[in-house]
Image 1: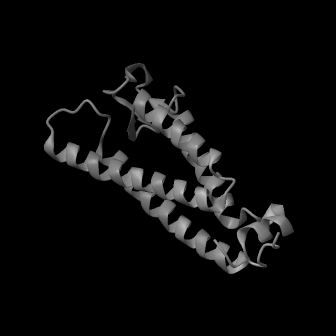
Image 2: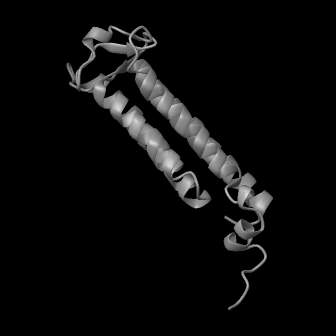
Image 3: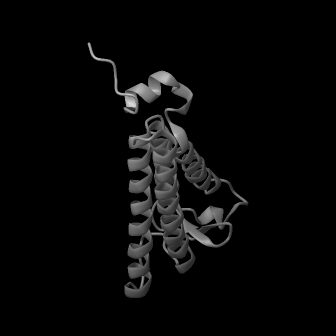
Length: 159
């Protein structure tokens, strides 16, 4: 049986399992915590204003009094956070998962913007502030994914 090449992922993991995840996995865990926190905070009365009007789809509840939320939004946030966390052990899977979550935020921001402009009433919890938040999360999460992937390659030589 041949020994793994010096810079192969298997060789790096065998040499130092603690560094195998590198910056990509650490970043994915941080994003998972952020997204989970947004989901959990949306379910706490007081942090979410108009909590009594929190509905499944249509909702008048606002996280921090600004960002429209609903039970579906809270559930999706928690699901995204748990998904990123569950894939954060492998650099490649962590990176892919974080990028997909960023793209989901892009879709939410652009889709919500279309609904705010084109619909007189929507059953989805959208408002301008939420759309901007989703677009900002897209930019920040994707930029961080690109930067941490570059650092990972510089540090460990492979991805």
